Image (cartoon, rainbow, N blue to C red; front, side, top):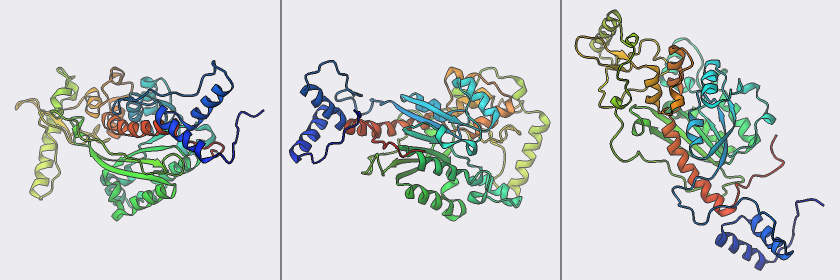
Length: 399
C-alpha cells in the first residue's frame, strides 16, 4: 500500500479544525492529520515528523536549514550561515587557490567550474548562497575593460553570463530562499540596465526580491559597500510577501582598525623607501591635476578603505603609519582576514602565498554582515516553519 494518501472532499468543519490545531499546537497540516490518525487507531509508539519548540523566542530561535555555497571563494557565506544552524550540502569554486583555503578551513574541497556542474548533482537545499562574479559590474572592472576594449556586464561571456547559470539552477531546484551578494555598482552599471535584467530574471522566476546596499563598517573596521539581494520563492513557499527587513548596524562603538592590528608584524610588510617615495610623488601629481587618486594612510582609530583583490600589488589603498621616520606598512594576510571578519581560529591558518591570500580576502564576502542578514532570513524561516512545519517544497519537479 502506498505511504502517500490523497483525501478528497474534506468537509469544511474538518478543514477548520485542522487549521485551528495547526495554530494552537504549532504543527504542520501533515503532523495534525498523522496525529489524529495515530490516536484514532490507538497506536501510542508512532513518532511524528519534525516537531518545533512551543513559543520559541522570536529573535533567538534558529531553525535548521540546508544551503549550497556557489562561487564560494574562501567560504564567507559558509562561515556565517554555519553559525546560524545552517548545513552546507554543496559547494562550488573554480579557483584552485581558493579551493585550497576552503579545504583547509572547512575540510571539503569545492567542485570546480559551475558551468560543468550537472543539475542532478546539486542536492535539494533551503538557501542558495552565491557571491556571483562581480568584476564585470565593478567600477574598477568596467573602467579596465573599457580601456582595453573588452566587453563588460552581460556582454562578458566568461563572467557576466554566469548569472544566467545561477538562474538555471534556481529554476531547476526552486530553493525557498536566495541569498546573493555583489558590488554596489551592480545596480547602476550600464545606466541601470544590468540590474534591470537581473531583477526581471528573478521576478520571472517568481521570487520576492529584497535588495539593499550595506556598508560593512558597522561590523568590521572597513568601509565596504556591497549590495545584498535576498529573495523568497513566491511560487511555492512564500505565496504572501514575507516580513523581511535588513539588519541595522549593531549598537555600540564602531569597530576600530587598531583592534585587528598585530603587535609585531614581520618587517617584510613595511614599504621600501623607494616605493614609499614613488607613492607620495604619484599622489602629489594627481593632486596637482585635481584628481583624487593616492595612497590611503589610515587613521588606526577609525576604519580603512575597501580592501580590494589588487592589494597585493603595493598595498597603497590601506597603509598603516609607523611614525614620522619610518615608511608605512601594508596589512599582513592575517590582519586582512580580521579586517574582513574572518575571526575564527581556523581563519588564521593561511595556506597560500601572500599574493593569493590578499586576492582571496579582497574578493571575499564579509561574514559578520552575511551572518546579520542571515539572522533576519532565519526569522522568516522560523515563522514559516511555525506556520506550516516545512518550507512546502514540491516533489518531482527538480532535475
